[in-house]
Image 1 (cartoon, rainbow, N blue to C red):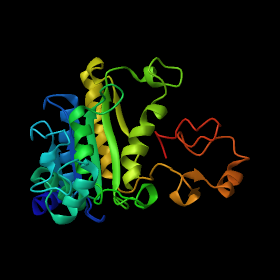
Image 2: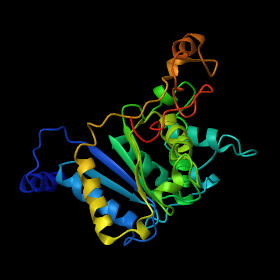
Image 3: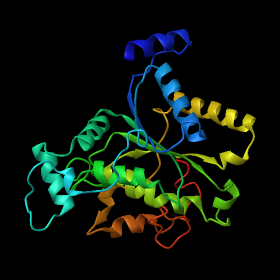
Image 4: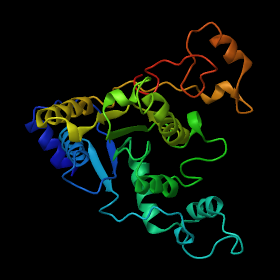
Length: 284
């Protein structure tokens, strides 16, 4: 696949002066002809033409099991009398006894320099099948652990980003919009799901209400997506407070003193009672 991608890159006029990377796209949509499907194909085409290696986890076509179950551990468990999923799967990760579908996804994550999550927004969050991917693949010991969270998370030095569509128009997700500020909506996903395990989080790629725009608009969106992907590894990442600035799970007095004269809080989540920058979860 890599050789084919290199040939395509030369034929398309791409200059291969950048280090080639491994990309994983975790895709959660039932319909290949959807705009999410078009975004997926454009990403695979663009990144491949640039010489990157691209893997896709198409969760619906894989019939990925979203539920955390006893069968996620092959063979015996530590405590047959009381099944504690987090600890049992941690032990299974260490002993090589996780179920095969989880092990396959973990290997993809280990290889990836960039992970793109492509999905439609469901109820202000991700589809259930993608939530289940996080629940099962983010195994304790592999993705996170005590002392291995946020700035020291085990996905450190990997890039992660959300690419999604909405049903409602962009105006509905403004600070004065019907659905509320997109910055607030994204905090649990980008901080709690991506940054928590250590990803360097890129600004999200959001396409508002693609079902209600013209074909020309959608074509332009795909072109713009490709342009962004050409330079995705050079993009600055979103700002989060480094873990070293916390003590006993709270911001240190020294850090708070340094922020005291600033107009805005450091992040959407750690806003310390101040307004937060409107670009917080949307732009670096």
